[in-house]
Image (cartoon, rainbow, N blue to C red; front, top):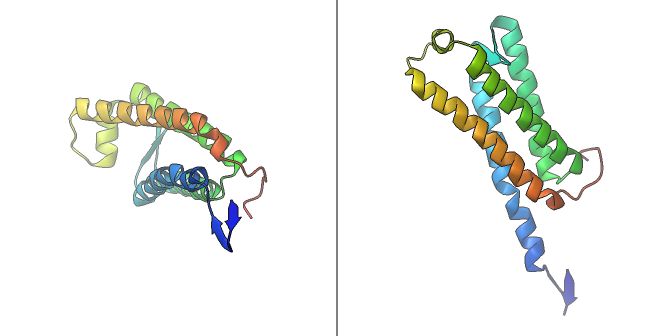
Length: 153
């Protein structure tokens, strides 16, 4: 930042830095809200469908982790970058294991949705690709996460 005649002028690079991470906040906020919307329903995770209290516990933990990641993105915390990459790999592994280990009919019965088999498979694969692309985006924008503090304050 330069000071000229009592005005503070931000360089174009500093203005751009804040806006590159803004879509990430929206993506993880949407993921958190979608996860919370399934509270009380069966929850598929790592090739197994959880119901009842275990489902609610998994949804709660996933939502708290997502909230932490959102705040970490807002603070541009370097630790959050690596947690985001790990979270994306975990979600990708869970999606692929659900696709390979769980029969589609069992998932449709548990969720109560009548979705054709190929729609579910395309959706699961698209989510897998989305998380991998998010990891590529995070890796190439890792210099934007410049806060080296391990605390969010």
